[in-house]
Image (cartoon, rainbow, N blue to C red; front, side, top):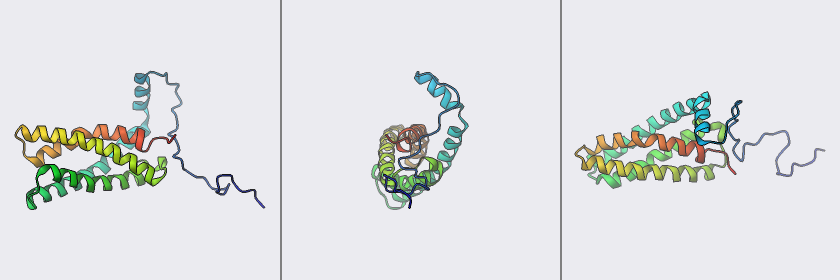
Length: 170
């Protein structure tokens, strides 16, 4: 008879909770933020994740704009609450696809990562609303302003989700 594993699982299974940390580069990276950023930019895996994140983001972008347009143009909802509603629909789409595809190797507990993803996305929504408000105030139509705001906020959203939402759990 095999001794039970102290974690309650079987010894012949590999568990990925907590999330498996991203494997370090073969090169030695000094402790400066600039050196770490440079090393991260040279890793192919990071670029592949960015492409996947952007493809997932494209579906979220389409969902966001579709829901936003429907609410503003058809239902007559003010653009700020419409942006919040379209955000909730798009963030659900994006979390599911990023968890299943983009950051698949970094999956941890679904609720833990989901809360982190929601926090990062909510911060991105705040930045989006600031940009949206400024662009609409500058004379752009609401839909065009929302399209631009989403694009401008995407890099911050990616970094936050890669490093925190789907990053190694401590």
